[in-house]
Length: 312
Image (tube, rainbow, N blue to C red; front, side, top):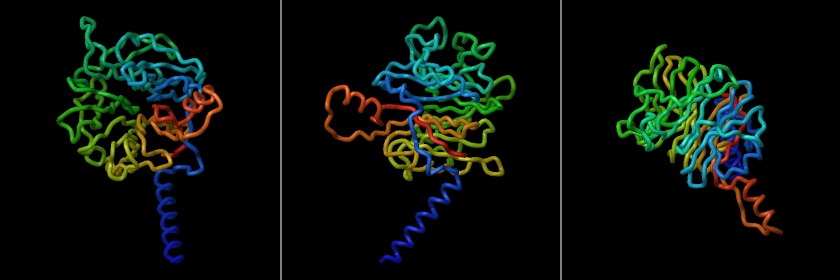
């Protein structure tokens, strides 16, 4: 019996080491909150940070997510986020900053034209500025080659400006799938559905594309090899430029709760992601202040932004 147990243990260790070598996850590195100052917001999600880490953008939402705005933090002063000026009465979420810092992409249900007054389906929009740290322009709809009568979400771009995003449509493999549009220097192609190594009959969404367009990180919902709810997966291209079968990024990052909205900061090898993980447990509190501190400062089931060192 002991020999069988030792054999099983060695097999588990070998599999873990093999997996670690595949995605170079540091098993000694903890998953932690981006910053405890953000605990003052009930729902915080999405995240992108500039290559120099002098600007970070994320979404704040009401508890039921019917109010959604994008905010910015300068130079990691997490206690002082700034609401972006174009955020009006409509929903704004899922910001992505271009590599030169001069264009910010996002999803919104704002009216498609200035003459409209009612909210639309979710489209991909952007704002521009002439110089970094300059003022943002009015929002610009990215156009009908990308946007449609369906909902488009979570834009991310490679260095060649190829655009990856989520679309809710009845002509994909599932309801939510990952698409991309090729940039030819002047305009985007129509959306192209990624293959079955990425998409399935289930739900795939919130894809982050690496700058060199060789790594894709995204969420699969209730996948057979998942840990529950939404898990982060990673896929890399093979030598022929085709996407390999996506692999679960592992239970160091994924939990039985929802993990989504990944962003990978290559200079620091840091994966940022949103999670609804929950580790609250029954306990006695000496007063209401201690209770409030416990539920706001812990993994409490609400959307919070986490980070972890991982080399992809």
